[in-house]
Amino acid sequence: MKLRVAVGQMRSSDDLRANLQIIRDLLAAARQRRAKLLVLPECALTGYGPAIYDGPHRFDERGFKQVLDDVRSSAARAKIAVVAGCAVKHAKGWVDAAVLIGTNGKICGRYDKAHLYGEDERYYLPGGRAKVHRILDTRLGMQICFDLRFPEPFRDLALRCAQMIAVPSYICGADGMWKGPVIEAHVRSRAAENGRFIVFVNAAGPDQNVPSMVADPRGEILITTSLDRPELVTVDLDLAEVDNTLLRSRRQDLAKLVFS
Image 1: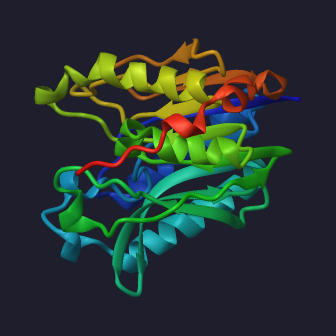
Image 2 (image 1 turned 30 degrees about the vertical axis):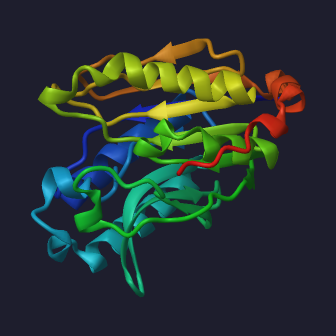
């Protein structure tokens, strides 16, 4: 089976209506290109907390919920599934989430960022184990940004038969340009070591550290975006290329390490 995926590289802000309009435009472009899935960056709907807001007390719970509802409606009209990064509030506080929206506009999955980076802890609570979701005849897992540095959750998703892992991210900053080759190496490695497709989507901007990119199960980069501007690119993924060879060959007896 082949699946056409759209990578929607964008820059979000605290102007929720502006974010929504950008996403509507990306959905329209993705539909025109006959994509079935659109992946957006980390906190694309609401703006990434540490970069925009001076604390979670500035988050607009009602506004965030409304923009998510509007994106759901837009996804349903376009008949495109969406991985949408956004801040979500639950009983104990806020989480940095990736929400999976089906082609009917219904929320059919969510992952809360587990590995918090830098100022994240001032804004968000850590999430837990990611689930594998069935959508578009595909098994999809999600991770977010800093999670990419840790191989364990990607291996866990692969062992539970995820075929593709979407990674919404916000990796920007004038003092972090060194991250570019490191992040690309991680994208390649997470794909190759698990035999899965990795769809990494970064926020756009002049201080963007690394372009968005998609890697195939061999670790080859299939497509990349520009480094400094909003852009939509599409790529056809042949899910028959998902490969379990390395998963079957691994030596679990060599992984029992204890740190003192």
